Image (tube, rainbow, N blue to C red):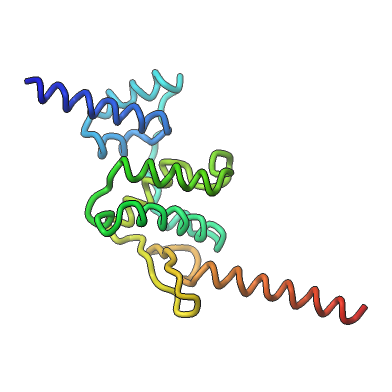
Length: 180
């Protein structure tokens, strides 16, 4: 009986950490096993409002531009670095929280309208586990980048895209300087 009580306490403590980060109800349920009505109650108690509802997005919805792809890749790389190959078999709440904290340290605007929120991070981790989002190596620069099934953009390296863009800008600036 004590073990069951201890396990329930640990699950509820984890649920509170996830609710603090405003993770939606269904992922909290998936990570803790707690009933969704209990999670909704915790959310409302913590945030003084009901949790968001509606279907969960797929990570392909984050691939709308090369900049977004680079941000998703940054989070994915941090998550993979912390979790190793087991991220393809198991979604760990602790690794997810650590990776998102690192992402926010590197990309502080993530707390504002830009960047990935914690539910977005969970979606990416979920889709990495299922294979709907995956890393591929770039044939030009050698860096791994993320692609997603049914993404709005072609599966190309975002880093090489920005490198080419920067070279084009430098080339135009040089051309203007020469003609002046």
